[in-house]
Length: 137
Image (tube, rainbow, N blue to C red; front, side, top):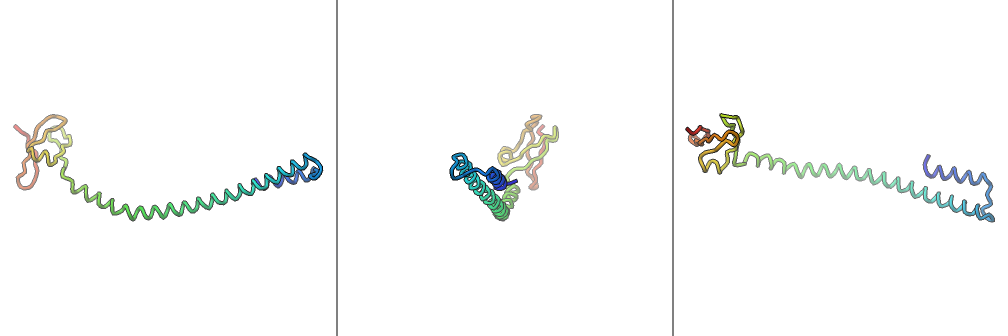
């Protein structure tokens, strides 16, 4: 039962009591209160309708925004993927303990890398444009 229906029921009960709304103070009070309740009920129903309409509009805007974001950020995602391949480092496994070793520009400049797990040092052989890790003896 909606608020308007409840107020209409209350108004029917008051009319069924045959209250004198012109001479009786109590009748006037009840009549005014019921009138105020009717206005409040109608206002609440209007607010509920407006909130539902706004919710639907927000859903449409949200869907549109998702479409725009997918178009705009799609290019950035592709750029990030390309940047991953442009990084100046790579990983190899330590032959001794299989810990990942990061070989970057600094390690290449030094000519060796030390395993952080087992402490074994390896020299970097750059012959034939390949990088190989040879254990120092």
